[in-house]
Length: 162
Image (cartoon, rainbow, N blue to C red; front, side, top):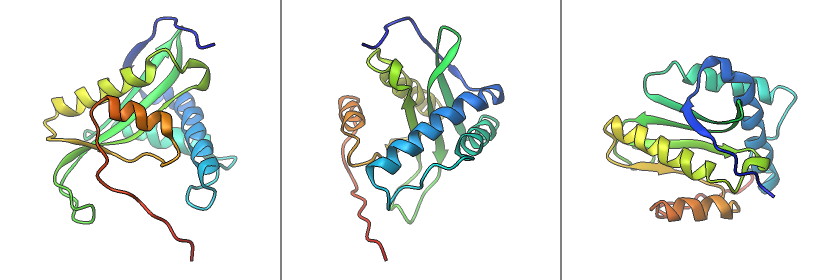
């Protein structure tokens, strides 16, 4: 049963790299399990690589990395960025939600929803006219959370192996 201990949301710092790497590796594992051909497999370097990447993003002015912290431990994060027009995506300027992940043991306490709200608010504060995201087709829990938050489906990615 999930614990409902209080949590807080704060900007991530480079010092959070190890925790961000663990959560990022969890994201990679889950997606790879959804579709082993589409999503990259985790490697022994996934935690370090993902953590280093997100730590770098904390220094980027157009990026937002937030963490959820409970009892002094990082239990989730959200990563978004402000992006300009994208001809390939047929999209004007937008905030893009790249990642949102919560530790399995911390789910059910509202942390994912709080992270989603906080990253959307941070993107709006930067003047984006909309927020877009992609989610795995099989990630039904995330899809329900995004729909409850007012997101609508606009694109469907399809994959064929060559």
